[in-house]
Image (cartoon, rainbow, N blue to C red; front, side):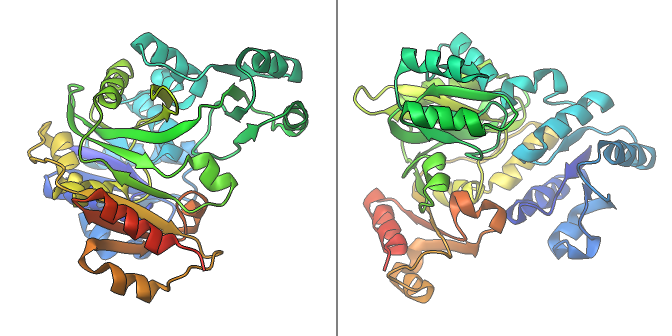
Length: 387
């Protein structure tokens, strides 16, 4: 099997995907715009060939690169990056080279939030009321139906970039006066906790691994209000969240892919409301959290699914694993050294975070695990308490 991996060096914690593919006997062909010498040694050793392009955004260069790989290695089998940013590029390459996986004709369903809503409805999963609006008059008409506050977000976007929470008619008018020239979705604001259903589906669309996470607040609030993010895995997945997640995976036809499905658990009635579909691993250090919460190696298991359509790990969620981010712009009650001393063995991993992600998850991240959720919450307070 010949697997083309786009941007294998970034994000930095994803290099084990290539390492484990190589261990599974897959020929991993890397392509990026970084110098070969800049790749970490483990990654260089995992690559059967690395081709440096001037710009990964130049589709013609990518086509020529895959043509080169085909000439050198024969028929290609897969292309991926595990990144939301390159999702459309991957789909286009799969279409042009007739490769297995998500193709260009299906990409609107996983990139356009308005199309996601339609698929959710077909699957019987509730969504927030909303629509794509182009004018202030259309915005006012939608607000008349759903009331304030409302959320405006790009119909095609990553994370919380370019997202507004609108509370008043004046703010609505200001939004349309400053609105970028792209399609925007306006929808009712659902007050509740952000939760996710995450996992991996095999080649036949069967879910072979799943997990759930609960968040301290939405990513929109984290970015727009410059808050610290804390989220943690659940040892038991609530049945209604799992049912909504499984319905969504089936409706979107997920095969041989990770998925990260975001929902709100609404305050008051506690219902599950769909937010967004992401057909890639959950971001940040969440794949590492899978491992620490379950004592497994999800990178190896994914490679086994790709190479042999086989998931061999047994998991029972013995731990909650929590992520706590800190931002360099804030003053905390405890220094990094004091945090390390205080948390002891419960702290399983800590690392700087690339600046491109700092708005959402911070400049430095800590992973803490415990069978007791109260201990994970205590660690979050200890890490994130401000001076």
